[in-house]
Image (tube, rainbow, N blue to C red; front, side, top):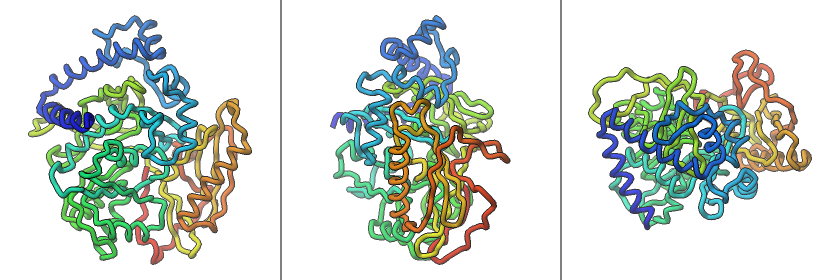
Length: 464
């Protein structure tokens, strides 16, 4: 109950922050950053060393005084960065190896999330339950406070693991206030018709999904195979095509709320009616916008403190002008995240279906630091993996066995037990020779585009 009351206070605080001017927002964040530095100076050996070497004082230092932190830096220095003695890299890996339920907490106290979509490199982040829920409250800027009770929320995405999007969908589970809201998750790895049938039975009040799936759900609604009347629609996890947004708003008769979030920062931006476009949320995040990346300092996560953490998204800010709401926050004109292709394969029935890249990102086996899917045929692929340097006691044969078990389960759920795949150990995951960028899902050779079928009516476009 104390967390529930805290949410009410945090929501009031967020509303007050939205009425601040730009300089007031900056003053508030400078004060919060100073408090963060006092904490990490005492509890994080990694940051204590940096502050000592650079002679930084909490009262005067700014994020720009610190080095940029990459994903590799976070993993390699994880045990010195985290501030809780109960959280360590080995303990987090062991937890993720035994738990696939996003509702599970490490030691009953810590939310553990992982990602790897932008580079194939597995990355972990730990939040205390209180920190996680504080970040979650930004959702209430867009989700109606009043409505039917209990409110039914449906989430369509990758659900079999500790991925950020499904963990956000499970937040009410940790609050233990089921009388107010009930959430059901739909695995994007299920056959598409089973997802549609499940939504029809549930009749959700709130619909949440990846941006790349909304157009397909709108198409099903327009055909009449889907028949739901959601009061609130939120999207995130990958890009939302503008044409799909317009179609969904026409078909469902509701505005679509676009959420920009990452594993390491939670909600970075939001687009909803009163924000007049996508607004860069800066209540508890200090964000530096550079030409090819963002450098974000998380001001509310003290369990895994991140100062100047690099996110490889290309963001262009809108020209400053007067706004009615979120007066002190900057607006996002364009946002180019990482796009990934779906893994299209022929299933047991001989029809084309897909495995969503965000379901691939969900993969986790201890001892593997990077991975990539190479489609080699209509019903076959190669899964390339890079092991930890020195393997740290992990047996390659056991790693291969666990990897095959993961994929066999995934393919069985998708009704693709006919698909053949190989596990290939490599020393390096190479970039695409044409684009010179990493691709999570790629074709080994030129393969004709999938033929449309009755079982898959979805449009084909890339996702991240």
